Amino acid sequence: MALLSMRLWVLLLIAAGCAAPARSTRFTDADFSEIASAMAQSLYASDAIQNRTPDSPLWVVSIDKVTNLTSDVITVPEQWAIMARIIGAAPLEELDRVKNIRFVIPPERALALRDRGIDDEVDLAYGSRREVNHTMTATFRSVTRANPTARTDVYLCVFELLDLDTGQLVWSGSYEIKRSAVGKVWD
Amino acid sequence: MPRLMLFAAAVSAALAVGCSEPKQTGRIPTSATTLPEKDSAKVLPAALDEFADQAPRNLVQQLSGLPIVRDTPGQVTVILGDINNQTSIVSSTDFEFAMAKMRNKLINSRFASDKLVFVEKRARLGRLAAREDVVNKNPDAQKAVGPDAYDAQTTYTLNGDFYRVARGDTQTYYMEFQLVNFATNQIVFSDSYEVKQVAF
Image (cartoon, rainbow over all chains, first blue to last red; front, side, top):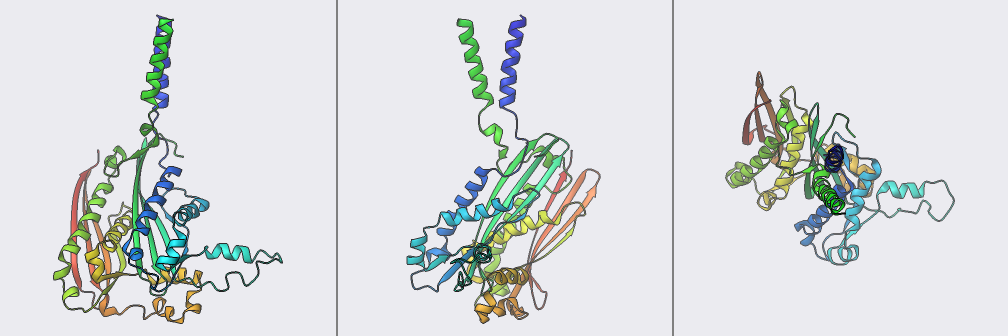
């Protein structure tokens, strides 16, 4: 009888332990990957890009890291990684040849290379002919509701392509994620 | 031996049931309402969602009849305006969430984007342009960040007003979305949404 009880407890503990609900509403890597993939698809299929031809005015596009207005931690490397994934999914050669769109590295990256204080080939000429006229930005927001034992976060991730000469938003994409967690200690 | 096999089968079943991936990630549908949301006196995220869906939809439906469409040749400029949060308990960032959703829906509406041109606020545009030294490389871009960035007559702001009436555990939220002319401050379009909720 005691052995049977013990076995039943083991089974219950396995089921309960493995089925433990999430204890954090923080973004996961899978979330970032999903967001970047969806936004890349949305951007490259958008009218703003599809309607362009090789003779359209040249777009030189830079990126800025995510602006985190959520109540959660998204580290700076994570903020850059999300944007880098969208560029990484871009058919760069095709965009240049067929749509007259070029992506450049962020200005912070160019400056970091140029201003290292090392006398090498990466000198003041590096990026000297950089003429960016568009920037891709992203802003993450959240709505949080919590009680003493549980928490829910709804995240809204809005991505935009901005014409820096006119201020016009030429494309905007958004993605929503909702997460729920239990427990009194948050990640 | 049969008992051991039975126990092993039971353990496998427990693992399969308990360790199924969807239960562990914490990810839920955005339309789901959770206990922390119901327990809170703050506006339900689902209500914010409905408001963010309804207002742009109504604006697009009525756009062709609005004076800004009839009387103004060409496109008009729209910028995200002010959030007037009079609820006392809900953070303005929650309403910024809803306004951001609305703007995104309008930008992606083909009918609306034929007439409405959305621009970034001057301060943010200035910061992003300075990051790329755009103004020094293209003097024409100075206009977009200067005091004459917009023609006030054909520029409109999207404003949001949020109010709450509280009686015990019952909260009534009234949310209003307006399109306001920059120069005259005339409200050319208004849409409102009301929700009553009880926190348990």
